Image 1 (cartoon, one colour):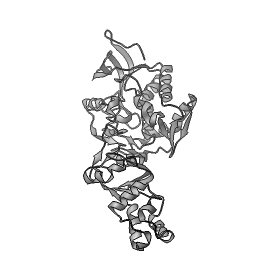
Image 2: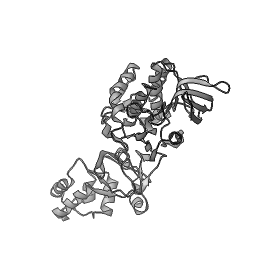
Image 3: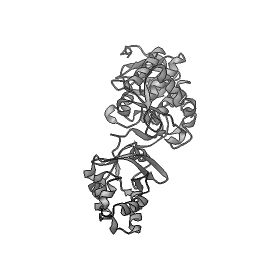
Image 4: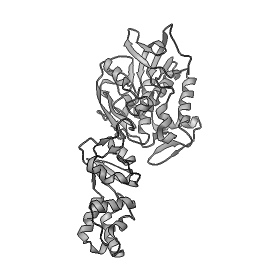
Length: 402
């Protein structure tokens, strides 16, 4: 990992990158390939921790459906330039060059066949080939602007760098060492930091809303459509001890705020009303809860009947009642009280205001030579490899100019 630069003399480099995650390693590699002398420091004991744990250890490293509309930001246009210049196909080319086997899981999501360790290894190999030095267990205590660039005090001593790249990530998953240090640096250098909150995170229920569904913990639906306002996502859903989770819920959580009306279409791929009418003819003696259990998990079907619909033999329902039940199944209100927070969130919404950065280089408009890349910036992608692609693209954009 590099010999360290304890005590003594000050180390001089062209580029210092704070943070050895996806964005930081990409930036370091590209800068190193241009002949720049690059040092990467990270306070964690090993690099790429979030890459290693992502996708259940298989690393969902990009998505073939990436477009700027898949990102949330105070400026929806900001991500366009970097994403256009470093595409999923560019990253795939590097993965293939390193002979890493991968597959498409669903919806354009690409995963390693074996282990996310291979992605970290690839980035480290590329960095090593480009002469990049990487030091883990090396936190930063302060950074100052000088006439020549930046003077940075690290756990291993002082570093002078012409360019300083902040790739410190967000606040999600503090157990892996996430901190707000990047936001502190941004404010120190005069940048605005937009309010942060947990994104791609399970939602919690409380009071009677939790009591209703608590014992359904572990019940999963393969496809629902979760809706907030005009935004909707179709994917799986899971009941938890504290609320609801699963891909559809994680996706909508980035758009949901406390008090927002959340609706779930429990049967987005069927016409529930029409199907119930057919069942009334085909199975007049069957109880509604048993009929619904053909389309929904049995425990959920029973609970819906307890809470909302009585369960009578099908022949006892009028056509209008079945139409009403069908409509409710497509528009089921769920009152969430909050989220599980940064502890389990995959990303952090908000962050360094893009108004203060160049969209083509990610360089500060206020401090020449200062760059912010990856999750620390107010650009947040959907679930499914989009955040990695932003890390690669923003890291590449900065790496070409640092």
